[in-house]
Length: 60
Image (cartoon, rainbow, N blue to C red; front, side):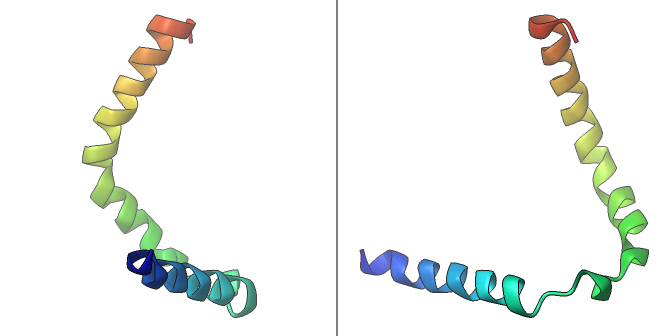
């Protein structure tokens, strides 16, 4: 499983960083509206299909 050792190291590095060095107060929240404007043309049709599926099969 030598092929997955690099992937495991990457996961370990990210987890270590998240639990030791990550501070949520350092996130720049001013870019979130621009990001949402970027992805809504893709996300809205997907979400419409999810709603249609839930309505058809589960009565939501």
